[in-house]
Structures are given as structure tokens and as C-alpha cells.
Image (cartoon, rainbow, N blue to C red; front, side, top):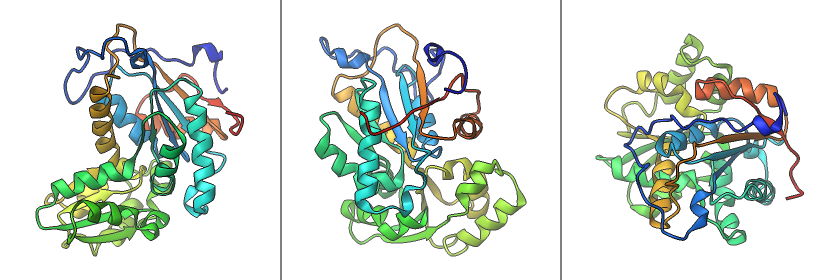
Length: 300
């Protein structure tokens, strides 16, 4: 625990406003006590906070629990079986907090472990890849979609497969952008180095695609510089925003939307380096965190 009594880790954030309209008056299905439960979100580190932020904005009345597996980052260099084991341990931890749904806020874990978790868990599990792929297919007009992601996600081909499963015949161009992650974590959001790196990475995509998937959860932090390089004639797909919309629709259809009076709360957990997580989290979220607790996985 980095700051204060663990009992104070829940921050009252009931004044959060939705960017997509007030959903506070939606009624949960009568007799469904699960609507009171929080939503669990996990990632291999801090990048998934962009997904947390998107869900927070889309569902301001819902309480959220976030786990960053910072002791074992990055997942992208691990085998499929190892990523599945890590993901199950993360999912079991957030499940132990009584959540009503789990969001995998990590592209690697979404690609390699989402179906595995669905086979192991009885509550809804959502990954970021399918949601982003659906939005990209809907957005493209010329049938040419770009995907920027980590090397592991590009080599895995998860976005390409997901997009082509929805609509065959589209032209997908994928580009790994590994330096975007450390640049985002350093806070170099408006730095000449970041612009130079973006120009190098995006050169082949600039005149080729009309839709660009930000296929790593760090990349929305760098969206302004990406837009400067790519121009105005491109639709940008933030998988965090896409999965937040899918999550909202699922909660509505299952009668799990919270419609009570209590303020929303948030809890943050990590497996290592709480102080660094807190520094980057405050950059990503644009506000201070009251507490971050360090936990050990494997016993849940």
C-alpha cells in the first residue's frame, strides 16, 4: 500500500460525467443483485489505464477495480501458455473482489487468453481486440485499414484475423511501434523526439489507409502527435472506447447497469513498483490517485 489506510483507498468520484449521455436513470433488471457489483479491469501494467479511463467516462456511475501486473510486464515476450496463466491469476484476483464483469485491458492477453478465460470463468469477459476490430470495419470507406501495435501483437496477427473474420477482402497493413510505449510512459506527449519517431513509424501508412487502429493501450496517450503525422482524413480507432461501448451494451442487455444512489468508487492494485505506477497513472488519468496497493497473485 503506498498511501494511507487501505480502508481509504476507495475514492468517491460520483461527480464523474459521461461523455456519451446520462445513463444514471437506466433501470437494472429487478432482482439482480449483481448490478451493485464493480467492474474488474486488468492489464500487464499501466497501458490499460486508457481503457480504465474510457470505461470511467462511458459508465460514470459504475465502481471500477484495476489491477496492473507490473511485476511481470511485458506480456508480449511470453509464450501463449504463460500469458494464459498470468491472465487467469489476474482474473481470479479481480473476481475475488466480487466483480460482475472483467475487461482485459491488454492487447497481448486479449489475443492469447480471452477465449481461455471465458472457458474458465462464469462471468462475462471482454477483450479489446474484437471491439476495436468491429469499430474499424464499420469505419473504413476504402477498405484499407492500418494497425499500429507492439511487435508481439503484430506478429500474432490478432487484429488482422479479427477484422477479416468480420469482413473478408479488406486490406490490412500492420506496423509495430515499440518505442511509443516508453515515450508515453515518459510523458513525452508533445516532444520533437516523439514526433520524429511517429513520422518514421507511420510513413508507409500515411497515404495508404483511411482507418487506423491504435492497437496498444498506451497509444491513445500519443494520439495528438499521431493525428498530426497522419492528417485529418483518417478515422482513429481507440480500442478502449470501443470496448467501453460494448461493455455498456452488455450491462444493459443483462440487467447489470448500476442504478442506485451510492457514489462510484475506484481501487487500484499492482504486483510491483507502486510508486512508478502511480506517477504514470496520474499522467494517463490527469488526476491524482489516493492509493495504490501492492498485492501478490496466485492465491486467489
